[in-house]
Image (tube, rainbow, N blue to C red):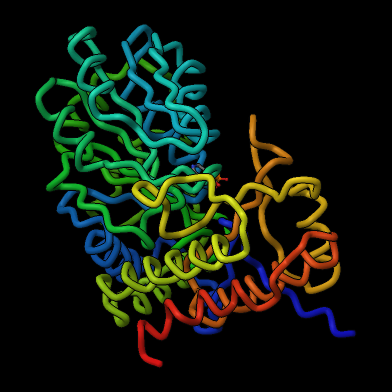
Length: 383
Ligand SMILES: Cc1ncc(COP(=O)(O)O)c(C=O)c1O
């Protein structure tokens, strides 16, 4: 048997050959004109994805480093922070704020739910002194997408800053930083951007810069003023991952060549097909259609078959890797990613493997029903 693997977890995601080839280019010095030119191009392309005129910094660290950069620079000790939590990554954003000694008001909407705007409005009314609001665009632990436009409209009526974790959403789900009033948007390379782990990005609005300059939090590697000092020369404060910059340049080219609108529609179609397939197999989805993510799908494990046991069977027999649950849904759900370098046939492979895994685990499965449901979504009524 060959050991062919199919990576279907919500990060890291498969890397396209063109991006791998770019990463393999000879390493160049980062204090050179060649690097500066590439850096400038990357930032201009990233600004198109973020839909912003704000500064966008490319950071050599994982997504959590971008979240810490946001907090360390926008939050001072004892600042009141309103944290909107819909799962594990919302919890993490709040933990970082606590580590920086903020006074954090946690509003937990529960795993599988999205942010309720009425609750946000009420909390902002009760706490007019909130300095910063934390939100997650796409909650990867559950496969729920939050209404950042709606949250942005509420925060815009207050003096607070809006910091958004877009680590798994940006590049797969549209976000309009300037129009929606996102003061800092964080994302990372190993998700919809189709790169290996190792880079992150953060945008910073003019309003956010005022807080950055006044912040009393300690920072060194994560200092935005240090990034800004050399930004005009398209330099970076410390040694960047030059090879991943090459890769990011190539992956942004791929995304812009496909057209961002097409990228978002492709993800929406893959999500629709995956959800139709899961329902056709009689399994339950974690998120309601209304707030379901376009880049991954959370599924409850079938009764009498553990979600992790099912994942193990699928991985060992068919080389398809799905992700497990986290926090309170650990062992209870599995997550199928359709994120980044992913198209229709990847979903067909995933669903076909799921059907066979279910059969091997003793679940009464109507073989082919899931694949058929996905195919019908892809055919769009042509048959
Ligand atoms: C929404 C979200 N936020 C933050 C992170 C953390 O990013 P990293 O693992 O790159 O530090 C992840 C990673 O899965 C994520 O999905």
